[in-house]
Image (tube, rainbow, N blue to C red; front, side, top):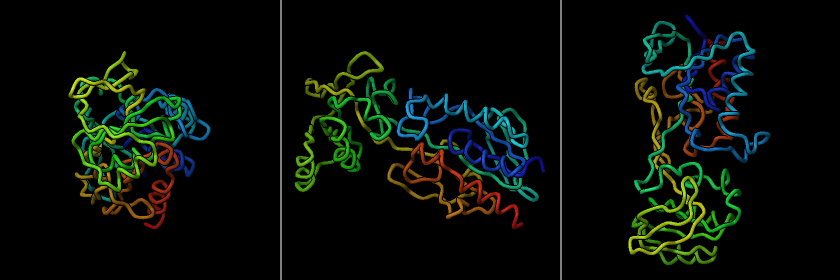
Length: 297
């Protein structure tokens, strides 16, 4: 067996798991493709001790700390397949290499599917946002918008006014009930039913959105709730069960983060119905679960 545990995904959750296992002196391989979900954001906020730091800098610091543990190997690459093998699993990489391990931790994260609107993609993570706790403070209480893709936009539209005067663009995605309209009015949220057709301003900043009837509405930030999907198909290839969360499918795991497949554990956004970078960075249960399973067997 090459390693005790292979961790696929080297962003916050994967690095956190590797740190715990390295301190347990377990032989760990951390594989990362270098494309974390947070690569579009300039800074990370609401993260104790790291507030305002670029996500890439946080991960670089963690990588340096992991390098001090001689049983942890960090490898750049893409894991493309994983199959059950004698006493564990065999993981195949895109470069043709393979690795055998007794356990797998999937920290592969999720991929966002953004609305198809001119000017939106290039602003993603900077002025087009999904988490007000992560980015709302920096909007400095300027006007903001919520672009609906489903009735879930009600959650954003009721929450976001704490960060600035808010307009809910229903965008033909749903029609608020009278009760919902009253709740929005109580929060000071305006409702705009004409669809958005374009984002305006010098990218990546946002100054306004253009509506289908030609009008413009000034906003400094636009909150969306993109549909998500697993960033890797390894969990599906291994036969792991999935649940359906508010934004998309996620890997089902027990209290020790073991999936429906014995020996396969999941961590971070890939295994959460509600993705959050700070929660991913605090991921220790998958590492503990994988470690304990090795001891028991």
